[in-house]
Amino acid sequence: MKTYPKNFYSYIRILIQAHRFHVIGALLTVTIACVATILSSYTIKILIDRASLLGQDSFSALISPAIVYVILTTAVAAFWRFYDLIFIDLMPKMKSKIIFSFFEYLEEHSYRYFSEHFSGDLATKVIDVARGIEALANLFITVIYSQFVVVCVTALLMFWIHPLFFFILITWTFLFLITSFSLSQRTLSLASVFAQSVSFMVGKIIDSTTNITSVHLFSRKNHEKYLLSKQLEDTSSKDYQVGWATTKLKICQDFFVLILFSSMIAGLLYLYRKGLVTEGDFAFILSTALAVMQGLWSLMNKIVELMKNIGMCQQAFSIIKTPHEIVESPQAKPLKIQEGKIQFKNVSFHYQSGHSIFKDLEVTINPYQKIGLVGFSGSGKSTFAHLILRCFDCKKGAIYIDGQNIKEVTLDSLRSQVAMIPQNSFLFHRSLLENIRYGKIDASNEEVIEASKKAYAHEFIQTFPEGYSSLVGERGVRLSGGQRQRIAIARAILKDAPILILDEATSSLDSITEQQIQESLGSLMKNRTTIVIAHRLSTLLDMDYIFVFDQGKIVEEGKPTDLLKVKGHYAKLWGTQTSGYI
Image (tube, rainbow, N blue to C red):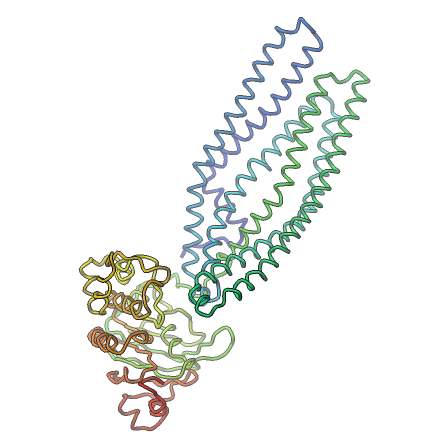
């Protein structure tokens, strides 16, 4: 498995290293553009000095600096455009790599992680980090680095004119930056909190729109607007705090601007009186001081945007900072199933809440057995199935398939050989063909249609104008519950895995369709180890064996007919059924 940096700044260093030639090229072009900008101001000083010294006879002496000024001005424009070309060539590739690497890491997170986070919020963070890094790169090079170059070159030329201006500029720049960065720390903290609040706001909007059907059915539009308004109040409050902190920073900067110009003008007047500076020096000192002031003021203006982007990126970086819960062993080997024997040995498991589900559970499911899991909701049936798939890891003990510890095999090989049909089948917003083919990516159209026929889905698919090319909508919203379930069953049939898990697989079907599906599932179960979770006990009459769960324990086990004769927990459940349901 790939290793990822655990903090944002390490990730930036890796990106710079990977794209160092682009970065060096960008810095070099900006350096030349900034130097040319300051030198063009210096040529104006030379023009003014020569004009004032020679008067009407200065025309020929002005030609060469004028030509130099035009060349330098052209160079400034040319090198900035060259920087744009480098940036355009770099960023689309870099953003694609960033999004792919974050998505790659996100996909490896556990079932628990996705159950605890908004999917929309996670998607937003993946996009945010790419956008944020692009903005940071542009801000750093065009604002921070370029201003550093401008200050350095300006200071050297000012020292050439007179050391007094050099010391004024360097001292002022140092105090300006120290004070501004000190005040900006508060802004950084507020910007990070603001970014998190915006992320929560987006998550609420996506959560509400994803479940818009429930909103309409329960007439809860006002409730959703109320929840959003509460979040917007929080976001607005934090936005106001960032804005007020920024305003205080600007007031401080205005005070520093007054000090810079007052100092420079006082120095110029003093030295001019002594005959140590020229009219051209006046123009150069004041114009470059103005350029430095505007640049640094722009830098501090951009510091809030910079901090917001850093805060946004750090929020998004939580995807990578959070370690994977289910980790594949570096020595993991592919799972090889010969028969499909499943063993739980001394397995204990509890969720993070601390409530114990299983304690020292010992279970053996023999090859090709059809096992039914029965019990009230919350008794541990679905958790039992999820542990086999390593959606969670047991806290103690181990699970074996054909003698292989599932923690010591690759996750893909484990899950590729287990077909699970969950109670709630959510489909991709893709075509019916793509959704069914998800069970076997390289399946032919004929194989997909055959699987659909076995799942009794082919007939209703043909009624759609676009047939198998019809899009199903987000999470399959354009299909009924029964239709979604049949697509999920077709997908499992196509997967043709040696282990089959059915978690209330026919609960969304009408009685006639369920009877037809049961026949297909019956043939699918042949020569497979099968685990069936069901509340409708009548669907388990063909099972070889039943495990009866109660509060994480197997309180009874045996053949369905034998369990009814025992008059125990299973018989009690059977007796409480209405129309076949517990």
